[in-house]
Image (cartoon, rainbow, N blue to C red; front, side):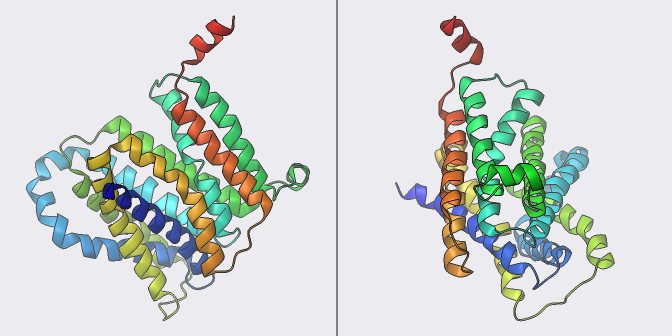
Length: 298
Protein backbone atom coordinates (compact mmCIF):
# COMPACT_ATOMS: atom_id res chain seq x y z
CA UNK A 1 0.00 0.00 0.00
CA UNK A 2 2.87 2.36 0.76
CA UNK A 3 3.86 2.22 -2.93
CA UNK A 4 0.94 4.54 -3.67
CA UNK A 5 2.63 7.27 -1.64
CA UNK A 6 5.15 7.69 -4.47
CA UNK A 7 2.72 8.69 -7.24
CA UNK A 8 0.90 10.93 -4.77
CA UNK A 9 4.18 12.67 -3.96
CA UNK A 10 5.00 13.19 -7.65
CA UNK A 11 1.53 14.55 -8.38
CA UNK A 12 1.68 16.94 -5.42
CA UNK A 13 5.08 18.23 -6.59
CA UNK A 14 3.87 18.77 -10.16
CA UNK A 15 0.70 20.45 -8.88
CA UNK A 16 2.84 22.69 -6.71
CA UNK A 17 4.99 23.51 -9.71
CA UNK A 18 1.95 24.86 -11.55
CA UNK A 19 1.44 27.25 -8.63
CA UNK A 20 5.16 28.09 -8.69
CA UNK A 21 4.78 28.98 -12.38
CA UNK A 22 2.08 31.46 -11.41
CA UNK A 23 4.19 32.84 -8.56
CA UNK A 24 7.09 33.32 -10.99
CA UNK A 25 5.03 35.67 -13.19
CA UNK A 26 6.35 39.18 -12.54
CA UNK A 27 9.19 37.87 -10.37
CA UNK A 28 11.39 36.32 -13.03
CA UNK A 29 11.13 36.28 -16.82
CA UNK A 30 9.78 33.05 -18.40
CA UNK A 31 13.00 32.47 -20.36
CA UNK A 32 15.04 32.95 -17.19
CA UNK A 33 13.21 30.48 -14.98
CA UNK A 34 13.05 27.95 -17.82
CA UNK A 35 16.79 28.16 -18.37
CA UNK A 36 17.79 28.21 -14.69
CA UNK A 37 15.40 25.39 -13.85
CA UNK A 38 16.85 22.96 -16.37
CA UNK A 39 20.42 24.14 -15.77
CA UNK A 40 20.02 23.35 -12.07
CA UNK A 41 18.55 19.94 -12.89
CA UNK A 42 21.37 19.22 -15.34
CA UNK A 43 24.02 20.09 -12.75
CA UNK A 44 22.35 17.92 -10.11
CA UNK A 45 21.86 14.97 -12.47
CA UNK A 46 25.38 15.04 -13.91
CA UNK A 47 27.10 13.15 -11.04
CA UNK A 48 24.42 10.44 -11.31
CA UNK A 49 24.02 10.14 -15.05
CA UNK A 50 27.10 11.35 -16.94
CA UNK A 51 29.25 8.23 -16.54
CA UNK A 52 26.40 5.81 -17.42
CA UNK A 53 25.66 7.95 -20.49
CA UNK A 54 29.29 7.82 -21.62
CA UNK A 55 29.42 4.05 -21.10
CA UNK A 56 26.22 3.66 -23.11
CA UNK A 57 27.21 6.13 -25.85
CA UNK A 58 27.19 3.51 -28.61
CA UNK A 59 23.44 2.91 -28.06
CA UNK A 60 22.69 6.58 -27.48
CA UNK A 61 24.49 8.18 -30.42
CA UNK A 62 22.15 6.98 -33.23
CA UNK A 63 19.16 8.33 -31.27
CA UNK A 64 20.52 11.78 -30.38
CA UNK A 65 18.32 13.55 -32.94
CA UNK A 66 15.19 12.02 -31.49
CA UNK A 67 16.29 12.75 -27.94
CA UNK A 68 16.86 16.39 -28.94
CA UNK A 69 13.31 16.60 -30.36
CA UNK A 70 11.91 15.10 -27.15
CA UNK A 71 13.81 17.59 -25.03
CA UNK A 72 12.62 20.46 -27.19
CA UNK A 73 8.96 19.45 -26.98
CA UNK A 74 8.73 18.15 -23.42
CA UNK A 75 10.95 20.65 -21.65
CA UNK A 76 11.40 23.75 -23.80
CA UNK A 77 8.12 24.30 -25.66
CA UNK A 78 5.81 22.81 -23.03
CA UNK A 79 7.28 24.49 -19.97
CA UNK A 80 8.07 27.82 -21.65
CA UNK A 81 4.48 28.15 -22.88
CA UNK A 82 3.25 27.32 -19.38
CA UNK A 83 5.39 30.10 -17.88
CA UNK A 84 4.03 32.60 -20.40
CA UNK A 85 0.47 31.36 -19.75
CA UNK A 86 0.95 32.03 -16.04
CA UNK A 87 1.11 35.77 -16.77
CA UNK A 88 -2.39 35.68 -18.24
CA UNK A 89 -4.40 33.06 -16.37
CA UNK A 90 -4.69 31.46 -12.93
CA UNK A 91 -2.91 28.41 -11.58
CA UNK A 92 -6.31 26.79 -11.04
CA UNK A 93 -7.17 27.20 -14.74
CA UNK A 94 -3.74 25.83 -15.68
CA UNK A 95 -4.26 22.74 -13.54
CA UNK A 96 -7.70 21.98 -14.93
CA UNK A 97 -6.63 22.56 -18.54
CA UNK A 98 -3.59 20.38 -17.91
CA UNK A 99 -5.87 17.50 -16.95
CA UNK A 100 -7.02 17.41 -20.59
CA UNK A 101 -3.61 16.02 -21.61
CA UNK A 102 -4.57 12.31 -21.37
CA UNK A 103 -7.42 12.98 -23.81
CA UNK A 104 -5.01 14.69 -26.21
CA UNK A 105 -2.64 11.72 -25.94
CA UNK A 106 -5.52 9.33 -26.60
CA UNK A 107 -6.67 11.28 -29.66
CA UNK A 108 -3.16 11.41 -31.10
CA UNK A 109 -2.68 7.69 -30.36
CA UNK A 110 -5.77 6.87 -32.41
CA UNK A 111 -4.65 9.06 -35.32
CA UNK A 112 -0.89 8.41 -35.33
CA UNK A 113 -0.39 5.05 -33.61
CA UNK A 114 -3.44 3.22 -34.91
CA UNK A 115 -4.92 2.68 -31.46
CA UNK A 116 -8.53 1.53 -31.76
CA UNK A 117 -11.32 4.03 -31.20
CA UNK A 118 -13.49 3.17 -28.19
CA UNK A 119 -16.87 4.34 -27.01
CA UNK A 120 -15.19 5.70 -23.89
CA UNK A 121 -12.78 7.76 -25.97
CA UNK A 122 -15.63 9.46 -27.82
CA UNK A 123 -17.83 10.03 -24.78
CA UNK A 124 -14.89 11.00 -22.58
CA UNK A 125 -13.59 13.51 -25.12
CA UNK A 126 -16.95 15.25 -25.30
CA UNK A 127 -17.29 15.40 -21.52
CA UNK A 128 -13.70 16.61 -20.98
CA UNK A 129 -13.98 19.28 -23.68
CA UNK A 130 -17.19 20.53 -22.06
CA UNK A 131 -15.38 20.69 -18.72
CA UNK A 132 -12.54 22.77 -20.15
CA UNK A 133 -15.04 25.06 -21.90
CA UNK A 134 -16.80 25.66 -18.59
CA UNK A 135 -13.48 26.64 -17.00
CA UNK A 136 -12.10 28.88 -19.76
CA UNK A 137 -15.48 30.66 -20.05
CA UNK A 138 -15.66 31.18 -16.26
CA UNK A 139 -18.97 29.35 -16.33
CA UNK A 140 -20.51 31.52 -19.05
CA UNK A 141 -20.33 29.82 -22.45
CA UNK A 142 -22.15 32.75 -24.06
CA UNK A 143 -19.33 35.12 -23.11
CA UNK A 144 -16.79 32.68 -24.54
CA UNK A 145 -18.60 32.69 -27.89
CA UNK A 146 -18.60 36.49 -27.96
CA UNK A 147 -15.10 37.34 -26.74
CA UNK A 148 -13.10 34.15 -27.20
CA UNK A 149 -10.84 32.34 -24.75
CA UNK A 150 -8.36 33.98 -22.42
CA UNK A 151 -4.93 34.14 -24.10
CA UNK A 152 -3.32 32.44 -21.11
CA UNK A 153 -5.75 29.53 -21.31
CA UNK A 154 -4.99 29.25 -25.03
CA UNK A 155 -1.25 29.15 -24.37
CA UNK A 156 -1.78 26.48 -21.74
CA UNK A 157 -3.75 24.38 -24.22
CA UNK A 158 -0.86 24.70 -26.70
CA UNK A 159 1.58 23.72 -23.94
CA UNK A 160 -0.38 20.58 -23.16
CA UNK A 161 -0.63 19.74 -26.88
CA UNK A 162 3.17 19.96 -27.11
CA UNK A 163 3.45 17.62 -24.13
CA UNK A 164 0.92 15.20 -25.65
CA UNK A 165 2.98 15.07 -28.87
CA UNK A 166 6.06 14.44 -26.70
CA UNK A 167 4.33 11.45 -25.07
CA UNK A 168 3.26 10.06 -28.45
CA UNK A 169 6.76 10.35 -29.92
CA UNK A 170 8.23 8.73 -26.83
CA UNK A 171 5.86 5.78 -27.31
CA UNK A 172 6.46 5.58 -31.06
CA UNK A 173 10.23 5.79 -30.94
CA UNK A 174 10.71 3.55 -27.92
CA UNK A 175 14.31 4.72 -27.36
CA UNK A 176 15.62 1.17 -27.06
CA UNK A 177 18.84 0.72 -25.17
CA UNK A 178 18.56 4.06 -23.36
CA UNK A 179 17.48 3.65 -19.71
CA UNK A 180 14.93 6.11 -18.34
CA UNK A 181 17.39 8.06 -16.18
CA UNK A 182 19.86 8.51 -19.04
CA UNK A 183 17.07 9.56 -21.38
CA UNK A 184 15.80 12.13 -18.89
CA UNK A 185 19.30 13.51 -18.34
CA UNK A 186 20.02 13.87 -22.06
CA UNK A 187 16.70 15.63 -22.67
CA UNK A 188 17.54 18.07 -19.89
CA UNK A 189 20.96 18.77 -21.44
CA UNK A 190 19.37 19.45 -24.82
CA UNK A 191 16.79 21.70 -23.13
CA UNK A 192 19.57 23.79 -21.55
CA UNK A 193 21.32 24.14 -24.91
CA UNK A 194 18.08 25.11 -26.70
CA UNK A 195 17.06 27.62 -24.01
CA UNK A 196 20.43 29.40 -23.86
CA UNK A 197 19.84 31.65 -26.93
CA UNK A 198 16.35 32.57 -25.67
CA UNK A 199 17.80 33.36 -22.26
CA UNK A 200 20.52 35.57 -23.75
CA UNK A 201 18.34 37.40 -26.27
CA UNK A 202 15.28 38.24 -24.14
CA UNK A 203 14.97 40.77 -21.28
CA UNK A 204 15.98 39.39 -17.90
CA UNK A 205 14.97 40.38 -14.37
CA UNK A 206 17.95 38.79 -12.61
CA UNK A 207 18.20 36.46 -9.65
CA UNK A 208 16.76 37.63 -6.33
CA UNK A 209 15.67 36.40 -2.93
CA UNK A 210 12.12 36.29 -4.29
CA UNK A 211 12.75 34.04 -7.27
CA UNK A 212 15.58 31.77 -6.09
CA UNK A 213 13.21 29.52 -4.08
CA UNK A 214 10.97 29.23 -7.14
CA UNK A 215 13.92 28.16 -9.30
CA UNK A 216 14.97 25.73 -6.58
CA UNK A 217 11.55 24.11 -6.38
CA UNK A 218 11.22 23.88 -10.18
CA UNK A 219 14.76 22.57 -10.69
CA UNK A 220 15.09 20.22 -7.74
CA UNK A 221 11.49 19.23 -7.04
CA UNK A 222 9.63 19.24 -10.35
CA UNK A 223 12.57 18.49 -12.67
CA UNK A 224 14.51 15.98 -10.60
CA UNK A 225 12.69 14.53 -7.58
CA UNK A 226 9.25 14.10 -9.18
CA UNK A 227 10.56 12.30 -12.33
CA UNK A 228 12.69 9.95 -10.21
CA UNK A 229 9.71 9.19 -7.97
CA UNK A 230 7.53 8.66 -11.03
CA UNK A 231 10.03 6.22 -12.58
CA UNK A 232 9.94 4.26 -9.32
CA UNK A 233 6.14 4.31 -9.42
CA UNK A 234 5.87 3.02 -13.00
CA UNK A 235 8.39 0.25 -12.24
CA UNK A 236 6.47 -0.97 -9.19
CA UNK A 237 2.76 -0.48 -9.93
CA UNK A 238 2.77 -0.20 -13.72
CA UNK A 239 2.04 2.70 -16.09
CA UNK A 240 -1.75 2.17 -16.17
CA UNK A 241 -2.26 2.42 -12.43
CA UNK A 242 0.24 5.25 -12.19
CA UNK A 243 -1.50 7.31 -14.87
CA UNK A 244 -4.72 7.33 -12.83
CA UNK A 245 -3.02 9.60 -10.29
CA UNK A 246 -2.73 12.36 -12.91
CA UNK A 247 -6.46 12.89 -12.42
CA UNK A 248 -5.68 14.36 -8.99
CA UNK A 249 -3.58 17.22 -10.41
CA UNK A 250 -6.48 19.68 -10.93
CA UNK A 251 -7.68 19.12 -7.35
CA UNK A 252 -4.23 19.47 -5.78
CA UNK A 253 -3.38 22.50 -7.93
CA UNK A 254 -6.59 24.30 -6.95
CA UNK A 255 -6.08 23.55 -3.25
CA UNK A 256 -2.42 24.60 -3.25
CA UNK A 257 -3.23 27.77 -5.22
CA UNK A 258 -5.99 28.67 -2.77
CA UNK A 259 -3.76 28.16 0.27
CA UNK A 260 -0.46 29.52 -1.03
CA UNK A 261 -1.42 32.42 -3.30
CA UNK A 262 -5.03 33.01 -2.29
CA UNK A 263 -6.72 32.15 -5.57
CA UNK A 264 -10.48 32.06 -5.12
CA UNK A 265 -12.42 28.96 -6.08
CA UNK A 266 -15.77 29.30 -7.83
CA UNK A 267 -18.51 26.79 -8.59
CA UNK A 268 -17.49 26.66 -12.26
CA UNK A 269 -14.01 25.47 -11.24
CA UNK A 270 -15.55 22.49 -9.46
CA UNK A 271 -18.00 21.75 -12.29
CA UNK A 272 -15.37 22.08 -15.01
CA UNK A 273 -12.80 20.10 -13.07
CA UNK A 274 -15.22 17.26 -12.35
CA UNK A 275 -16.33 17.10 -15.99
CA UNK A 276 -12.75 17.09 -17.28
CA UNK A 277 -11.60 14.33 -14.93
CA UNK A 278 -14.82 12.35 -15.50
CA UNK A 279 -14.13 12.43 -19.24
CA UNK A 280 -10.62 11.09 -18.72
CA UNK A 281 -11.93 8.31 -16.48
CA UNK A 282 -14.58 7.40 -19.07
CA UNK A 283 -11.90 7.05 -21.72
CA UNK A 284 -9.64 4.99 -19.47
CA UNK A 285 -12.29 2.65 -18.09
CA UNK A 286 -14.81 2.22 -20.95
CA UNK A 287 -12.77 0.20 -23.42
CA UNK A 288 -15.56 -1.19 -25.61
CA UNK A 289 -14.63 -0.78 -29.30
CA UNK A 290 -16.85 1.80 -30.99
CA UNK A 291 -17.73 -0.45 -33.93
CA UNK A 292 -18.93 -3.20 -31.62
CA UNK A 293 -21.03 -0.67 -29.70
CA UNK A 294 -22.66 0.43 -32.97
CA UNK A 295 -23.28 -3.18 -34.03
CA UNK A 296 -25.03 -3.95 -30.74
CA UNK A 297 -27.13 -0.81 -31.03
CA UNK A 298 -28.18 -1.81 -34.55
